[in-house]
Amino acid sequence: MSNRNTPQTDAPEVQVPYCLPPLPLDAQQPAAFDIPAGACDTHAHVVAADDGAYPMVPNRTYTPHPATEDAYLAMLAANGMSRGVLVQISVYGTDNRYMLEVLRRHPDKLRGIGVVDADVADSELEAMHAAGVRGLRINVLFGGGIGFDAMETLAHRIKDLGWHMQFLMDARQLPEMLPRMQKLPVPGVVDHMGHMPVAEGTRSAGFQALQRLVRDHGWWVKLSGAYRISSRFDDYPDVTPWAQALIETAPDRMVFGSDWPHVHISPMVNTGKLRNQLAAWAPDAALRRRILVDNPQRLYDFPAA
Image 1: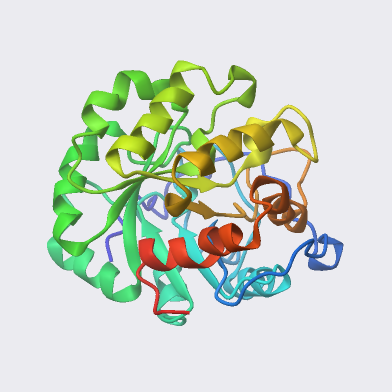
Image 2: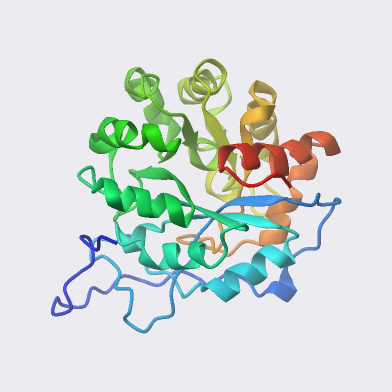
């Protein structure tokens, strides 16, 4: 696989502050509702052991602690999740190797979202598909990501694979970007409910543009990252109307993600408590099943649960 964003071994060490590590599993809040079989956490990251085998890019925004395959799988199990979707973490740039290795070892359980340059070889995309990748990420918020300039080119490159584009962006950018985004030949998925402060309100231009993409253009939203858009740690009650408005807009195109290991934040959050927010956002058990099982099964091409 391509390692084009991997720093050279003789490059000077870049001192980027470490993130907080995630809370231990025995500190996680237990489930507040019955989690259905086949439930999927659609947004998490893995970080290899700090042994130099997977160098991080110099222009990264943060330095995460290791969040290894074993730790990730233990987190899924502790939170009642049968399946998971790994998102290529920005600190590795376009070096997808570690994520792909983890995916290959769990073909029925895991899927992935990759990060590649616009000139990526077709053979590399095909190998990523075989490993379980089902989309590419555009990231304009953290160093190491691929930006909007590559969006149209990559979307056309992946159309025949049946993939989608995933966007880590501030939804306040959407009104300006909407004319381009709504013309993409593949579905779009927006991370973290738009990654804009909920204090902006559901009548804001950014939120209205997000709803338009979902309602009129078949886009999806990840119900994740409440702590990134709330001002009320750590119950995040101000996020509930926001999440409910999105769910009401398109209940068949909402998916849940933990965002473990919760990089680049302080204080650290409780992964189990984040999952339990679904009880408030989607009080009906049948609706929660759609969000946790049916919707991700369709979006990420999982076998029937």
